[in-house]
Length: 296
Image (cartoon, rainbow, N blue to C red; front, side):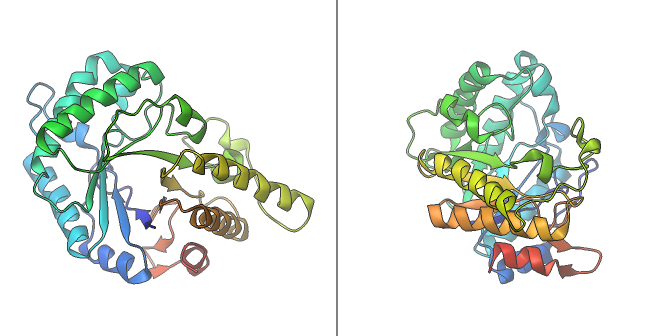
């Protein structure tokens, strides 16, 4: 099983920030074996074919990829925050396909431990039928340069586990489905400024003693058991925003991680050092209760 962590708000940020090389040592030495690198390629590529990448930015991504691979970490590179394709998929579909033609060729000589993910959380106007068609084109562009690379593809909308039955994956031995898990959202995203209405969610606990806590745990278990029935799905994100109380965050994280382990599902926690983070970069220290919930 792979136990991983996302390194968000770096290569996907505006402006982009390199991933500190020392982070890969921290992640590996803690016991993680996988990292997911969210990358905002769309902000650093030409608007017209062949969608040439900005050289310094591409070199920063190369440095992160190679730094992770040198540590023996399975490394996932995605297209993150391509907002325009979510609002106008018809105008940007060719660009996504072209981006992947270039990215796949760029990394075709890397270790099989590098995995690719065509698009993070398709949503909005990029609905299920359009995404099912576009993912085939993106995969074909990857396969033209790299026939055997592992590729992760999630469903629209938002890589939600309940949308997985509608995801149409091509017959390809090196493709795996991926989902994200943040249920219940009212708990995991309370106070999150980017979620409509979350400013009204306050003091939402999870998993305490008593009947309500038992119901909380049972609901998560039921979700993840349904997910496991689909096979070797990769859970690319799960986590809790910092506004939730730490005790509830730890209980939720430990229960989700424990159920994923029990069910034999690979996972990648969101996130390493953001407002969901298990590591405090200002203090230079792990948030030990969360770290232990992930790696007991």
